[in-house]
Image (cartoon, rainbow, N blue to C red; front, side):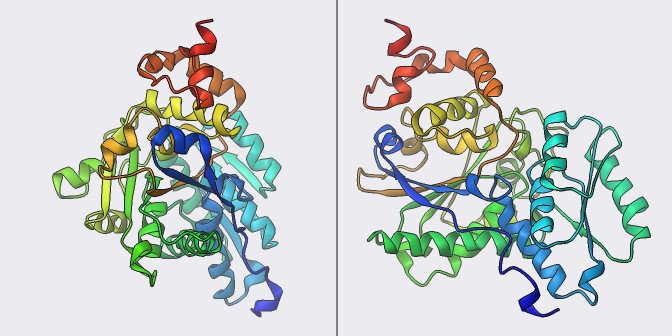
Length: 360
């Protein structure tokens, strides 16, 4: 298939911006890599898009290709969005528990078909592979995170970030923060850093965050081997992989990786405070990244940061969030802000459930 017949990439370059509010809250310079602006609404446009593009380029008859994905979350949405850009159909099979909001988003994004079947992801995926893929010679399976081409796609985030920092007159970065579900994003970040020429980027710390109830990487690192969680019990369901990818486990044992686990309450707090501080709505799987900026969490996890240290937060995005979601989070988890530092220069300190605005 000639390269001229395909768009160059089914993802976009996203902005890298310094956040005054989060920098003030964290006590160091915070830069936001706004992956929430990708066509699908999350970073997965990079990895899934790269896999789809690679599949078409190397297929004997790309015009017959039909993509199949069993993720009703951000991976499925990224698959449909990228497939539409590449002018190929994509079918998504999801379990019966998938929320109507995500079904609507998949259809709106241009899914060829959205099939609801099975009580869980495993049953939906089995149906996809045994009933659909086996009967479609042009069928291509799209996994959510565990594939080398997906990691390659995510690695473009790092080279892009490095160039943007240089364009802004910044030399290097001290740390990057990203959340971990199956580990696809972490793989991409670490592989991308390995390839950087300048050591002040290549050797930066990577803070890999999970929430309680889906910490498959953290528990694997503690035990020294891959483990499978019995179930997922977190509101950050986009991080809900019971077993992290082998590649992510291997790479996470590097000296520059710090694995940490936050609570659902902290992830939820990150969502509503980020909305107040930056007017950006993200789901809990991304809110956990932002949460470390508040109330001294970041410096506890990464001692040695100074006011001049530069930290890049991967705002991974996610489509499973609404205004009602954030309101519900504040109602259920507002108690966490009893420990909020009273810094009136951080807007969300004033608007917090227990903040100054609510005490007047």
